[in-house]
Amino acid sequence: FSSARKRMSTMIELNGRKLLFTKGASEMVLKCCNQIYNQETQMLEPLTHTKLANIEQAILQMAEESLRTLCFAYKDIGIEDIDTADNLGVYEVEKQNLVFVAIIGVKDIPRPEVPHAIEACKMAGIRVRMVTGDNIVTARAIAREVGIIDPKNTDSLVMEGVDFVDRIGGVVCKACHTIVCPCERDAKKAEEKKQTVRVDVIGKMDVFMELAPKLDVLARSRPTDKYALVTGLKEMGHVVAVTGDGTNDAPALRKADVGFAMGINGTEVARQAAAIILLDDNFNSIVKAVMWGRNIYDSIRKFVQFQLTVNVVAVLLTLIGAVVLK
View 1 (cartoon, rainbow, N blue to C red):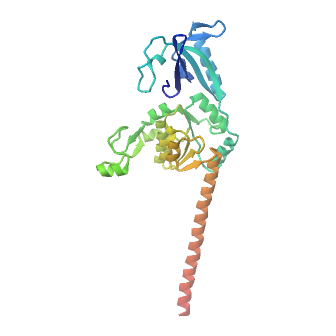
View 2: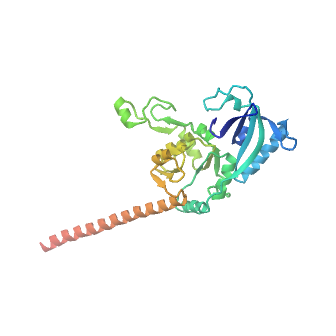
View 3: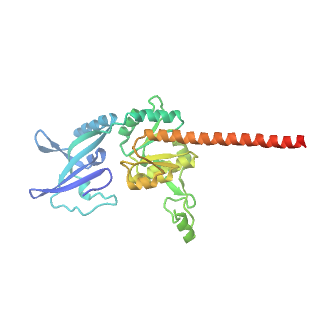
């Protein structure tokens, strides 16, 4: 069976024993462990504070090298009940008394063209922000590697999504001033039911305006965190573009002025929510889209300016000629 986000568990039966194997975000799985498997002695040992500190130090070192860390653990559950789960889908049997096995680091190497594309965005006046599910240390390291964070910029802000949303007061209804309200989101349904259409705004806009100019990275983010960031930026008057490939990116893709979905690895829900689909899943294609979009806009503006100038001159010459010749 699988459980909550950032964790996956599998139960197998071996020689009459029921074993639960768990893998997931290192900090989440590790806090559920109270024993460690010693590979040299092949014995179980208590997970002491010293051993725990060594493991946490190893996780930190991997994260600083932009590695995503996974923790592996298991548990001999015997005849324990596995039917009880909380609202996040985590079973009670998974939350305690696990045996720590190993920590591994996974490197997701950025494409070579990404740093150049981000630099091009900066030159074009586009602010690139990173919203990820990675832990805050790994997210900061990756952001520095691709150029989102400038090491010389001491004002750069990296936050976890939960902390960010708590500080800005979440997303609330403009009319009701509450996160949950009876207002209808769909305009047609609201008209049929004769209800007010819900308009989402940031609960504490003054705090958001203080954080937004410095914010470069949101780590351990949830779909609601992405949606809150897009909502706040639009409320400030910014033109917002969002890229994403997962189902949980759909609310932010739909809320943004322009949503870019991945055509190869993107889910159907993400593609339907987006305005533009990147057929090559390449971030550099966004730069090209901006370039051609601005080129078309400039061309239309120049054409209109030319036509107005010619027409105004023509009309003036016609009027002057008619008056003089008369």
